[in-house]
Length: 62
Image 1 (tube, rainbow, N blue to C red):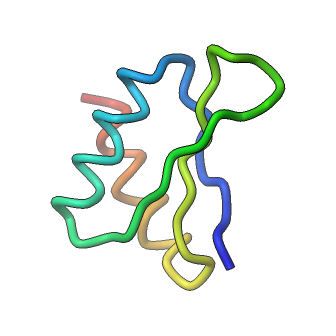
Image 2 (cartoon, one colour; image 1 turned 90 degrees about the vertical axis):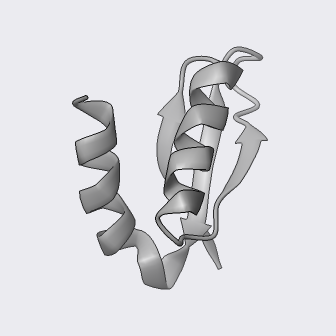
């Protein structure tokens, strides 16, 4: 099952995060949030959520 770990405000940011997380070895999907055409959900497998959150925190604070 896929879990939303972050909602990016732009497609460019969503793609950048996906690329960085994929480089770290995680499976990542992006989809439009449906709430706004300018928001994109970053999804990862449920079993990787905790690990991804640690890496994501580092990426967001660069």
